[in-house]
Length: 402
Figure 1 (cartoon, rainbow, N blue to C red):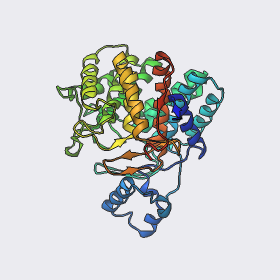
Figure 2 (figure 1 turned 60 degrees about the vertical axis):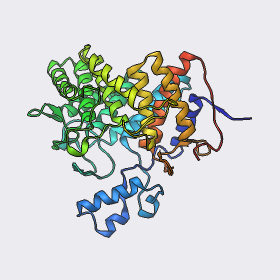
Figure 3 (figure 1 turned 30 degrees about the vertical axis):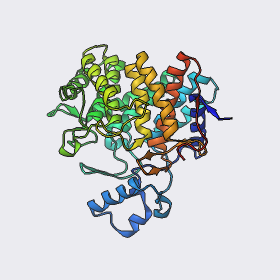
Figure 4 (figure 1 turned 135 degrees about the horizontal axis):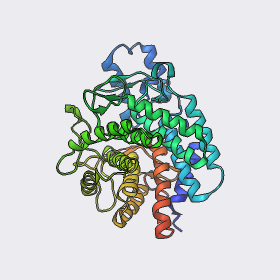
């Protein structure tokens, strides 16, 4: 008899798998945590940093144990786990999710970047991060990580009534506001760097807008709306956004498009406005037309399917359910979920693979990029779609995606 699996059962398997390592894991971008790289003395060469990081990111074989890269918790990954636990608590009411989320939130508060340097609550990654646009040393805060942690702390504080978490999130919003570049009119991704990236600008605007609404600060709200208007003005006529404004940022991919739409929708709710309805509508139309195949496969780029990527699937579920939310979007979310199980889920390991190419599979277990995203998104799907349409199950083969 063919085994059967519903979204709730799959999400349960994911969280148990994450708990087994106490939420520590590898990350696609943690290559510069390598003890071997440090011993080779290559850290002074910018090109070597990027090459080493890309080697570990792109290799389908996990070289990290050989390179001396340890599993660690990622602050953004923990924030996603908290958001997923809150979704799970609404679904099951088991009783352990809230204490677990609070324990993880306390850990996040202990991981804040140096407040003597940054003044407010802020978080970054647990590794040096080398990209063409900038180099970010470990311990440097960034907009996206801080925004997701602020969202997680706010949701947990609202659910538990714990004012400490809400206050910490409010203070994080003030840090995000400090990233506003007055002469340019947008929020930077990281302090002092001028790269204009739409998802960072829009998520920063959303979190600053939520902070402004919470504390009643019209100046903060005005700045958040002004920054969002700049990104909306750069939206193409067909509804798409490039990743950013630099030459090598000209691509249009699915999960960043989803980020933009979810953030813009969140800002609208915080501001109590419908100003961005047309931009959201055009963006969602482009998203639906260009990032899904008829069978529910989620494309990575608007012009190319490959690689199939669990992160792209997770953001697709969240975008369809939180931003679109029509009956059509709910049906598409079901197809996306079912197809992701067929193509990316590994039932023997009870988790998702990182990516799948035409001829290759990268099965490395990434907690922040893959499992945490999948857990949060699938719990959201289980709550928003499965409950509404009646309990659905899907069939899968024990050998699928292995």
